[in-house]
Amino acid sequence: MGRIRKITAYFIILVLTSCFLLVGNLIFLFFISQKTGNEKAYVHPEKIAECLVQEADGTYQMSEEGIDTIDLYNGFAMLISNSGKVVWEYKMPGELPHQYERRDIAVFARWYLKDYPVSIHIVEDNILVVGSPKDTIWKYDMILSIETLEAYMQYVPLAVLVDIVILVLVPIFLLRRDLRKKEQMRTTWIAGISHDIRTPLALVLGDAENIRQGCTDTSPELAKRAERIEEQIIRVRTLITNLNTDNKLTFGMGKWKWEEITLAAVVREVLCDMINREPGEQYEFDIMIDEKAEEQVVTGDRELIKRMLENLIGNAICHNPKGCRIMVRLQRDKRLIIADNGCGVTKEQLKSMKKPLFMETLGEHGLGIRLVKRIVKVHHWKIRFRQNGNSGLWCEIEMRGWRRVQ
Image 1 (cartoon, helix red, strand yellow):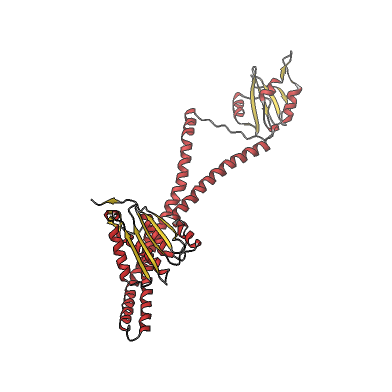
Image 2 (cartoon, helix red, strand yellow):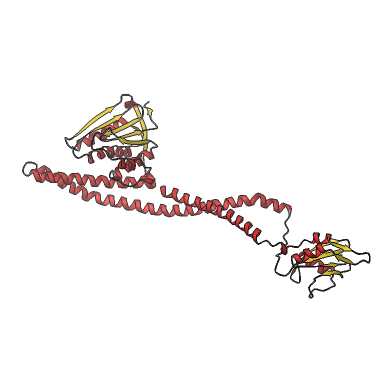
């Protein structure tokens, strides 16, 4: 799930970056238009019409201000009478005719006049045509109904939002499907390895136990070696089991049996099993179960809880070969405490154990502690690690979902 969160974060960052770039590009285009906008290229027929004066004899004259305005954009101007004849012009290109039909005027008023961008303005009964040089102005006519425009304003933001959601969800769906297939293959592979290795480990463990029992009196050294072989085989078997369980919890592939469990009974069962394995006389167990805790149950998977307890107690045994005192407390305030007074942990190790699962790297305490944290997480409990005074490790699990047995 950590990988999925990371991929989701990447796509959210991608969407936000795309929005940022879109806004940035619009600002950039506005800046470019301001810098490249040429006042000389724009036509202002209304302003020029104000400078056009009709003389007493019926002719027209352009004031100096109007001429300067036309010269400013290197344009031209002409006045077309109601009959279609040009009655006045200034710098009119020679290729343009002096007589126009009404349909001609209707066409160039909307588009171009022989590739010259033009604008028109009504002056009494005449039409003032103001033009600019070719290839200086882009003209495009767009017509939309008010209903269509309102629909655009209403639905375009929704369409953009849907596009963003699709942009995020579709890649995530495809990646999750691909990851799910890889996770299934990995889980199947680890389960197969666990199954295949279980039989040879059992055979070797049985042979080592027979050798140890047969050589205790005749060859103490050989018996001691057989005992070490037993210990290492049990350690490998536990590691394989932890790896398989951790993988199932990580990728949600396991099938867990959720039931109401009397936790005090499970704690006693695990401790009896651990003590029966004869960890050594150098290990002392101090067990205390509060009277109120005897009557309470917790909802969870029995095997996972047993695995959690075995890993915590086994961790204390494994990392304290010279021996230690292992304390197990089940309290009425919904806390399970497992602590030892052994060699303890360094600040770096403790910091690594406190990291969230998605940030965690396997350290000296390795897979066993990580599996404990995953089991705690799947039960929605809380776990804390700290140093036990000047030496040893203190682990405290705060449980939820307790209730008194009826």
